[in-house]
Image 1: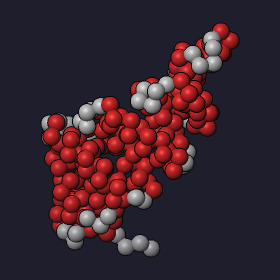
Image 2: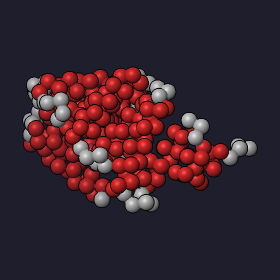
Image 3: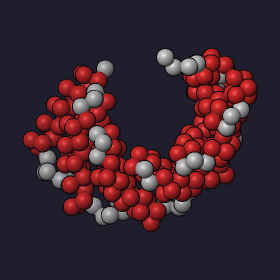
Image 4: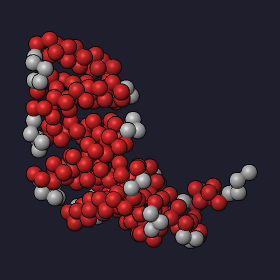
Length: 231
């Protein structure tokens, strides 16, 4: 349970604060562990304060390409985004992607994760073209390196499809949602929520394109609800 875990981690942090130098790595690790637990409990502002302390230390004591520094930036960016501070999150995510790209191969998972995180924030900020460009690069890499039914590939396709839809590319979004449904249909049972959601996404695309009969074939109940006149 998270409540007891928090209490233990607070005790660990207090002990390390009393015995270690302010910049000691073990002290930063204790802060990050507590921040993760606090965030899971919903106390994002408390987690943010701890993550900011860690980042301040790492930015003073680590090289810019240091993986711990990039992880600290990524953690803080994620918390900032959840709190709605999207521009601050964006600046950190741009730093992470730049640093990761300098030292890692373009196809490295950490580069793809950094690219995806940045794209997600750009999408939230309404910078659709930049978000699409980054999501396309993530999708292209995963499509070339993973089996067609891999769950991670379906997530990448879905992210790109929503971005294309926001840009008005309904046909492009439809093609991706069809691929997602095909992939999930090969790996999930018929009643799995992810499969049902994929069917609904495709049905909505078909409705948008005026293909009502085809939409009803995927999600008859949902489509009937959407078509019902509002009072």
